Image (tube, rainbow, N blue to C red; front, side, top):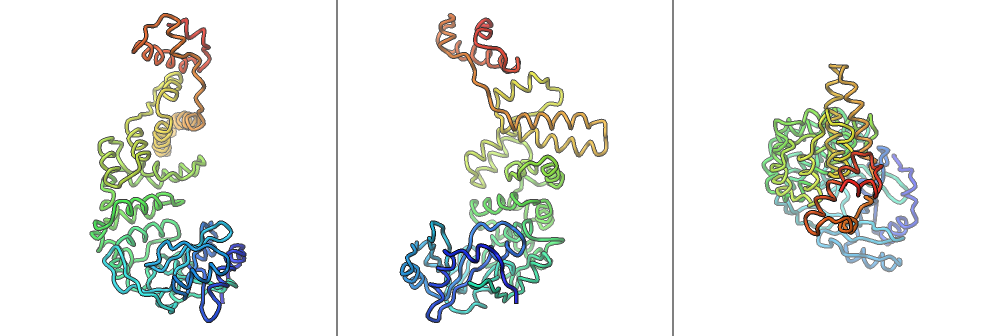
Length: 410
């Protein structure tokens, strides 16, 4: 018998929910990620509950216990229960009776085995009761122990139920897998990859972003390329920089940078503003992410740039784009320096500038348009052009020129 020993299982709010749903012949257990992450020593972000009660009965019972119930997905058996100000997703046991590769029609039930069998991966189909005792019906505990990400049942059938599971296979492998991906899952993902074309752009990008946010997505991305999946959803990466991702993750670790999905995406796609706009449109990226990618593509980090010119670009340009460009340039120089130690000074220069850009807080510019008008500059475009020129002088001076010194330059 395996038992969970964790603070979250003793949470009074969770215990209230489990008690309300387990009375009078019914059963309720925690399911999925909270158990998996606890056993693997990972952070717990939310706690989900599976129950034999129907959605209507779930709502009645938790409201009788003084909790709030929100019918967020009752057609699929899901009710969000708010306890102690926190949401818990509670879902009735179910099995799929009809799937089309994107959606499923479900039938509610009371069979824990049937509920486990309809889930995607063995490590996601573990249950535990209010005392923490784990119910494992699909071999999930052994797969957690070995770091194996494995579909429940036939991998091809699981994928055909929802083609998004191809991307989830690689995403969960990036987060939880060790060694090589499961062979059956890899072959099924490659064979059925055309099914990804049936998915919405939002679902695809959501999975890609989560994959890119893994501690080290390099192995998963390389296997995605090997299976022909990566070029299916991200053709911009084809014949480009996918092989650089491993070194980039190492650079992140060396310099203590937090994982950044967008910057990692930049590491594997070409800095072509037009192609990136098309990619952002196809994947329905947010305007913020699109603009960041395009700004990165249009920014450079010349090795011969003087300190004064660098300060001016940092002050006048897009700081985030410059940080992105310097991060990738630094990674390239580190890779080259492994074979040519004479490039180490350039590595140090880029590292210093990258740190300076990341920490930069622009100082207040001491001259206003009114100051220029008082100094005799004609109203209109001349004031804007003069302000731009003075801001460049201000930056190139190391931000030491004061108002009077700048006005003397007019």
